[in-house]
Image 1 (tube, one colour):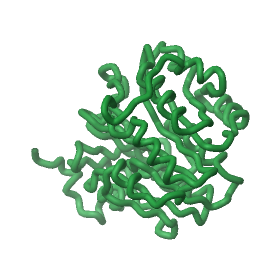
Image 2 (cartoon, one colour):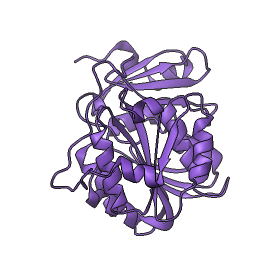
Image 3 (tube, helix red, strand yellow):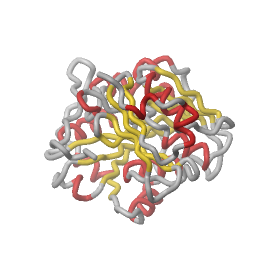
Image 4 (spheres, helix red, strand yellow):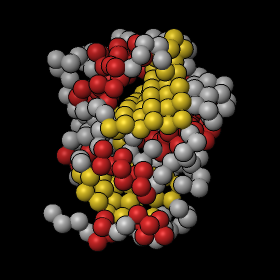
Length: 298
């Protein structure tokens, strides 16, 4: 497949033409960087036509995707405001959340594992991140990176990985009891784990993820729009877990005030939600269900 003309532009031209879309074949699909005509130096990254990341180079605190706003609430509440933390991100994309964390918690140490080396190169070239941030981005498998992490080394672990055809499903290797045990081992005792998941009715995949996380972490919360929780439509759900009490009330207030409000399910309601779901192991793990055709296409 020949590359579109934009993909062959030299770096200087890409930097000068800030309103010019960039198309490029990367390792795991076809990437498009589309400028937001309403915000200067803001870009949407799609992979094989599916929205993947949104980045505002001038304002990394601006978050366009609803699920990223919910993950950002977890970032805000995982420690005292502004306090630097150590974070491990499994899945990178255009580094929306790492940029947000660097802006809101200066001095934080962050490591990002993104499997697609070509995508990392594209983002580094066209959407460079702040060189002053302690942000290490490497081409690595998420599960392998997590299992190699030093024990009790992270305050926050975020899993946001979608693979398969079109990048629509959470890989099976990131859904099991063994995977979550590795996350628990890499977290400090008061650390927080957060995962971006996706599911539709009857929400069997997410119920299984809650049951599996509950076998490792005593404190859990699930965040999603009411229509997704009720199985009326396919969508994103953010699972939060820890060995210490979670700030459920503060998270509830923040998500209720978002442009697209979400609900937080915790305690007895979350136990009831996952009551009959089996714990998932490596032996029986499966990817998340794909979305309906065209659900996230641009």
